[in-house]
Image 1 (cartoon, rainbow, N blue to C red):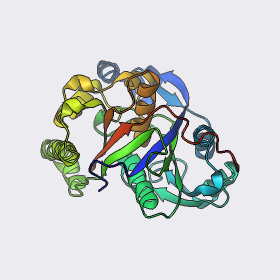
Image 2 (image 1 turned 90 degrees about the vertical axis):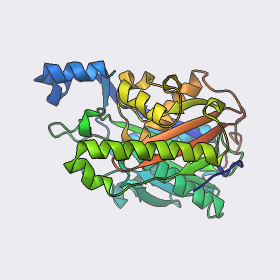
Image 3 (image 1 turned 180 degrees about the horizontal axis):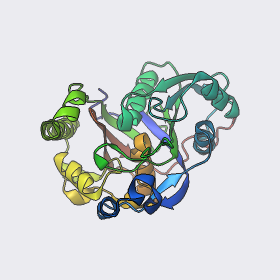
Image 4 (image 1 turned 90 degrees about the horizontal axis):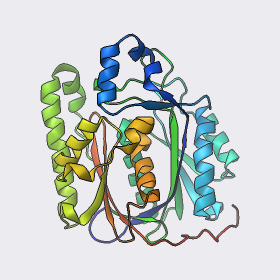
Amino acid sequence: MTSNCHETASISGIAYELGALRPIDDLDFLQDDPRKLELFKIGGFRNYAHSDLSMRELGYAAAARTLRDAGVDRREIGVCLYVAESFDRDETANSVEVNRLLVDLDLGHTVPINVSISNCANIMSALRLATALIEVGDTKHVLIVSVDKASRRYGGRRMFQDMSIKSDISVSCLVSGPGKGRYGIRYLKLNNAAALIETEMVDSASYAMEKFKGIRRAGKEARHCIAVQPTDFARVVTNNYSHAVIKMFVELCGFPKEYGSVTNVSRFAHAVAGDVLINLHDLDTEGAFQPGDLIFLMADSITAASVLCLQRNGNGDYGRDVVPGG
C-alpha cells in the first residue's frame, strides 16, 4: 500500500486514442433486442469506439503523445508496463508485438512487463507496480501503455451483467518520482476478494452484497489513511458503467453522488482498464481541478475494488524541456 500524507510518485503525460465512434444501435447483441437497447440507453450509453488498428498501432498512437508531452530523456525510461488482457480478445499480448512497439517508440532498451488478470482494475495494478519501481530506485520513469480491443465475436462488446459496453481504446502515462508529474500519488491500494469469482457465477445477490461491502471498506480505508473527509476531495473518478451504477459506487465510497462523473459514458462507453485515467484527463482539461485539489479514483472489477488518491500539482511543464533521446 502506498499511503499517508507524502507524495510517493507522480503521473504525467496522460494521453489516449479512441476508435471511431459508432451508435450502440449497431451492436450485434442489441440490434434484435429493442428492450435491452432501450435499457442501455436509459443507463446513459449512446456510442462505443471501434478501431481497425492493431493493438500495437493503437498503443503507439497514445504512447507517442505521452512521450512527446512528458518530454523526458527516453534513456531514463527503464520499464514499460503493457496493460492488456488476452484470454477473451482476438489479439493476444505477446513479446513480439510489445517489443516492436518499444522499437517504434525508440525505447529499444526498455524492459517490457505485461499486466493483466485484474480486468477493469488493471490500470491500478500497473500504477502500483510502477510506483514500487520508482520507490526502490529501479528506474527514473515507467511508461504505462493500456490497450483494449473488444473481441469481434457475437456479443464481444457486452460486459458481464450488462454493466457497460466495451470500446477499442488505448491510454498511456508516465510514472516518475515525487514532484515530477502533474498528479502526485498520495494513496494507492489494491483490494481483491478472490472468492467472489465463484459467488458471481452462482449467487448474484450474495455477490452484490459482498462486492458493495468491499467497495465501502476500500473507500473508508483510503479516507482514513490520508486523514481527510469526503468534502476535501474535488471529484470522484470511476470506470464508465451505467449512470445508476456509477452513482451507487460513488455513494458506497462515502461521497455524495454528484461527486461522480458520467460524461464519458455516453461519449464512448467503457475503455475497460483505461477509464479512470481518461476520465481524469478529460475532467482536468475541462477545468475541473485546481493545483492542490485531491482526487479520488476507484477502479472496480469482478473481484477487485482498488483506490487511488491523487493531488493535482501545479501547472508546470514537468521537464518538457528535457529532450535528449526524445
